[in-house]
Image 1 (tube, helix red, strand yellow):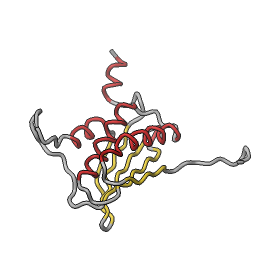
Image 2 (cartoon, rainbow, N blue to C red):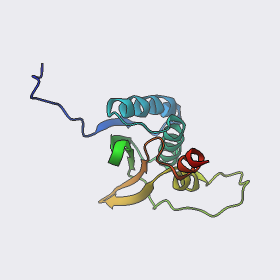
Image 3 (cartoon, helix red, strand yellow):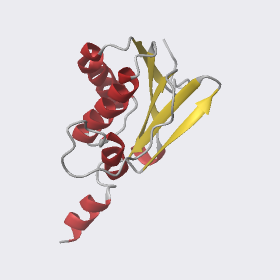
Image 4 (tube, rainbow, N blue to C red):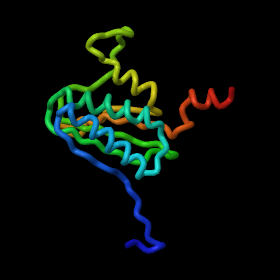
Length: 146
């Protein structure tokens, strides 16, 4: 047991899953619980959407295990990272409102995240986003001033 002077800081929570879309619900639950443990106050609906989009994109490549990392962001935000060893670098695809193949995941991430990006480390690709704390989104500020 930790004494009063000793505090444990969680820097990151991590989960590894196979490239099976049946794992998505379990991953969303893990990310939600991890966010709570970190003390972040992000919009849970945005968190669920970001998790689903990033993880489903990685799983669609069927390139082995997918690693999900959740860590604290700035000012009670949360950083979500999804790593895979699949080919290519995801980018925003400018498609019409209706596209039977989808391809709007990063457009959605771009709308709800404070920031996002793609990093490559050797054969591993990391797609990340930082979701703002509740109340920090521009539309939340607009509503609060009306």
